[in-house]
Image: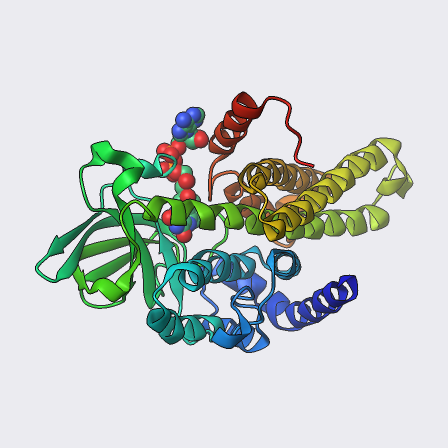
Length: 382
Ligand SMILES: Cc1cc2nc3c(=O)[nH]c(=O)nc-3n(C[C@H](O)[C@H](O)[C@H](O)COP(=O)(O)OP(=O)(O)OC[C@H]3O[C@@H](n4cnc5c(N)ncnc54)[C@H](O)[C@@H]3O)c2cc1C
């Protein structure tokens, strides 16, 4: 098992250093979506590595998926985010919830990179308060009519398929009437680009849905089930995006470390100053502890532990803060060079800020953890 993981790590690292690294700057600087690379990742089985083999994927568990994302993020956060959304959010939901016919038709295309998918929950009104969304999914005749506006949707600009969450009744019922539908891109969907600070080139978009009509087969989660389906995917996503954060932090640390061994100040390499060594020791500890949390959370998920959601929140709260801190310190440790576009750490710093916001802000994660504390007291996640 450990041997399998190290083979997986080595092969993703080789692929990413050859095929992802040369594109990382272009993706960021030009806000460029690497469509051909996405197909290549599909062929490698690392675009949606969670997809079972009988649906065209690599059938990796959450630990394997985490290794893939960690390794991709070492070379490009954006490329890792594309895999995270296509895998742990979109195909995860379809594999576990879509009617068999729909899963068999759509999932192989998403695993191979022939099609792009997006997860559309957030709206202009509501991100953290997702139970308050406004998009409507109404029964009219024998069809469902979907209407509303989604925002911040990763891959929204290029998606062929959208998993859209909406409500079948009044907002006062909050999560109790939220359903999920699968929409195929057509003339009833307009997408508008949103310029963002980091994770550029991932097709972040506003998605305007104007009376799209779908049948019963396109209902991925019925009312009452939709919110749970979104939260289940987000819990897995929180671990996956934490793994991505570990990869970003490793890359920032390694770049800073290498710089510090070569940079001379006051007649010696900067790494020889103890103040610098102590900072590196702190950063190293943050990275190692984040990775350990990711692997432990993946283990709890595999076991079906009821503590998995709180563990996912703990993992993301710690690792998002760790990634931001490592990137922040790496910029400073590298002086003016760290602040320049010549370095990778400035991009990693911008990328890492999203980890404190997407898939649950740090405040929302603390709400999840606090609820656990109030309900269970000092029940440890053993
Ligand atoms: C680049 C990018 C990509 C994204 N991709 C996707 C995607 O693919 N699909 C998707 O559906 N969404 C996506 N999102 C949206 C993301 O999930 C939301 O931005 C996030 O959930 C926060 O929601 P919000 O932006 O509406 O902020 P708000 O919910 O308005 O929060 C604003 C502030 O209020 C705080 N806050 C809110 N409620 C509480 C509370 N009860 N207690 C304390 N503080 C609180 C928040 O923590 C935050 O600091 C993406 C966002 C970005 C920036």
